[in-house]
Length: 380
Image (tube, rainbow, N blue to C red):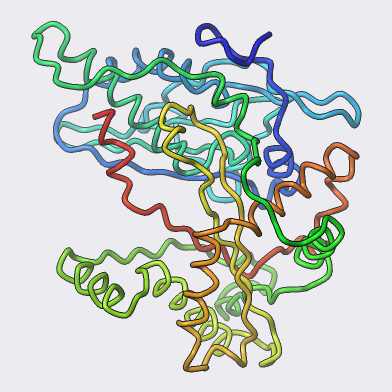
């Protein structure tokens, strides 16, 4: 089957090395699942939304695919069943708890969709496996779905003002692992040594877990929570202006704040030392303007940003973070070196060897989607 076909399904399709890693580095208690919640104002025609789901998913084949393996060969995406839209509130339909979000891609597609609708406000809830898509891919799928819904609900009146969607480009999907165009000044041996150091030999500090409530049994699991902080427009503009005046980006400031927050957390709840290494995994998109027609996939790399706890109080912390992140923004070398190494190890059947013995790559993940409105500008 040709990867350049623009109609029908591009499946079966070999998994990329990074997609394979996303499966190998998870286990049921720590699934590689992303969560996205979208709030909609006004009445929602759930039946129309449900009716447009199959045509939207057809544009994003990895969201309906199953992963199959044959020995040590590269796993393959094959066609799977179409996920259905589940309505919260119906008998037996509930959101899976945090400890039951695991998606077995050999048994079901990496996509679960829920809707919670009432007369004036609705929520769409998307749970998707990271091997199938990253957050930008999830937003692309969501924009396509809302576009199809808008066309379906305005077709009779002729009031549709939504742009037509471009046909899916299976060539881009087939080339999602293309890493050409970025070269490192290091030799292959040096690059491999550096990646192995990051993934296997250096040990970041695990984020400490607060002691359990004394009223709970000693072996009871720690309670997990979501914490949300929203900046109003005035505060956001003030922060962005202050960063620009200093030659920084808002992401530089927030990345530094994340390091300091972890340092404060460890000071309060941890038992480690000032010699502990705090490491952030920072996903960085590899998309270009040519990928506007790319379906939902995982097209990211990782930046590993590390600091010792004793260095978090340095006056030059923010400047150092800016310098390191600016290098990534300009060159993306570390990201590509990592992906090339993972792909090379997959060809040798040694991807599992890259996984650290501690199963801990980093202290925390810090992700910034940027201005998501740009993803919707030519779809809604």
